[in-house]
Length: 305
Image (cartoon, rainbow, N blue to C red):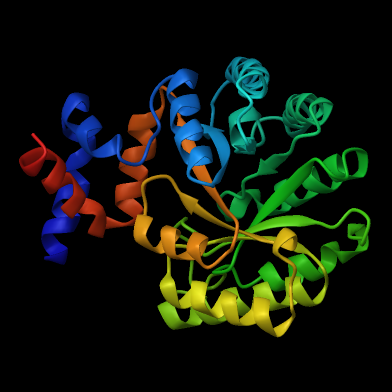
């Protein structure tokens, strides 16, 4: 079956977008901000928080960065006006990180300042290994000015992650704790810098999470892996972590039954809600990362019309 999944993953970029959308709409809120608001309200009504993400990454011209900044400023205004219980996530390469890091900083600073004016929060997503040092530097600068309004993502499969988290303890305090999203990692990296085996990645994920709990860091536990969820439950119990000092996070449309079980166990949940005109690139990338999702395409095309 794996060969079929890989074949479908390879064919997806060449399929008509109208067909791809039948699959994608299960994992993407829509193309417009109104779609994201509709989905977010439904999730809020079911007891979940959200984080809103405008799809896009790795721009080639700084004019695109300016446009993305303006879109995010509008998104923040609109989401706040709609009284959505949620915050915001963004990818620095959308704002020129690999073209001009100062322009990127200026753009993202304006977005964080806008969120801070509403006492809200922006998460800086971690991208591939060429971006890690740049994004840590960006986070340091922003947290110095907005200590309660900006967070970062770490990827457990990178061998450097625990060292990076430890090195950032100098800007962590009880009054303004660091807020990290911890995920496994999705980019294709060399085995020289990244763990590759499932058990190995899970082991380091839980090691990183335990370090965060031991040091009073606020972790957003981002996973759809049941063993990691169970491991997180054990660590929460071991360190007697108050409910307000962590949260679980999941992607929209993924593992709804596990999501429900976490909620019913009394833990907080935040859903990553992506939307935007760049949905096609997001869909093809997600399928390339996880060819097993091909079965969802088959269901969408042949079972659901």
